[in-house]
Image (cartoon, rainbow, N blue to C red; front, side):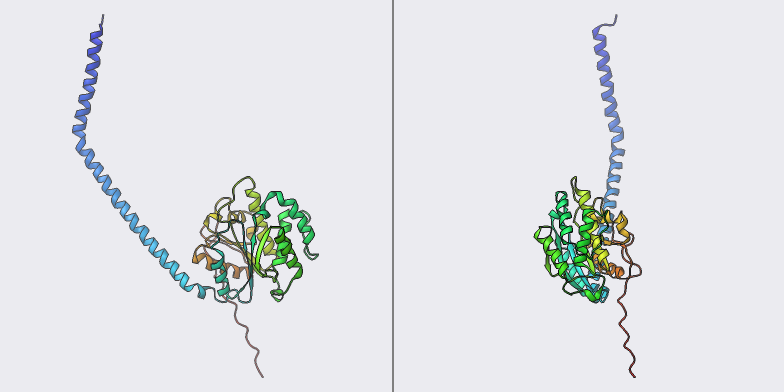
Length: 324
């Protein structure tokens, strides 16, 4: 019969053999393993250095291109929007720094800013839908035609579009009392604010998208309401564009929603308005809208191109009649 001492000796022998094997293995393999690790580390260091150099080179190229566009932007847009009026519409959550550089470049292109309209959070509150519906019925001018099956926000967009926009350049910068009354009523209701006199209507509109997609249960409906607003502005004038930063073109963003629906065939977009390049394209896309064309531009996944092609050019000056 095998006694306890035999078991103990066997177990000790097994552990001793394992220990000897580990020591011998480490001694035999240590040098090749260390040399291999040194080689791998050196290769990774060289790869990282090459990637850093490539990144620095790309940054230099990008900065150079940005400086060139900033220096040339006036020439790139000169005359593209001559004689037009543009209204700037800011949505809740729009980047605050976006409006001024876009407005300046639109002015450089020959247009006049009719005013700035800032949509308030209350406008997008689902609990206010009934109130907005009643306000539309109260303020809608007789000439504004709204389909009976239109949503509340499509109705509001039609009324606001009529107040802010006109396709007739002969009507711009003229007093439009009915439109002014609509804007005053919506402002007093806490649905929007405005400066200057946007009721002296514009032919083109730029809607500045929220910086990030809305969140929460109401987010999809709020984004859809802003798409309706952009469509209403476009339908009442000569064109509209939604501009935003790259996050606005990501899932759930306003530009992404615009590009995924029927509105993309009517309303243009640009998803890099935080860059000089993007702001130049905003002006070019507005000029393209004047020619009856639409495009989705930028760097986002659903953008169809970086910029319009062919690039719009200023209208040719009128040829004076020959004298006799």
